[in-house]
Length: 124
Ligand SMILES: [Zn+2]
Ligand SMILES: [Zn+2]
Image (cartoon, rainbow, N blue to C red; front, side, top):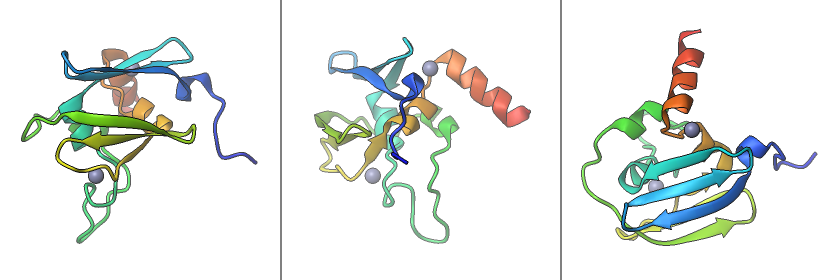
């Protein structure tokens, strides 16, 4: 079984880095567009170091955290595709360990409709 998904909801059609707006936009094959504030995306870094590794590991990022105000402002130096399953982001603080898999990015989409869907899933 191939590990990679063919679900258009989880496949990117394009990625735009808008340095002026300080945003990363992911256009999905199902027509959806996710707009991530760079600061929030840095805070959402899925690598083990950023997700904590002391008393307990948090392998899954809580989508609610993306709405928190980040402690500082981050910039992106470079973005590279990792195979066809993820995005690796090189931050200006020297950090680049975070591999943002497409399903992860889609899951943390901060748009109102995705947020509402998450709330519903949590309540139900
Ligand atoms: Zn990290
Ligand atoms: Zn969305």
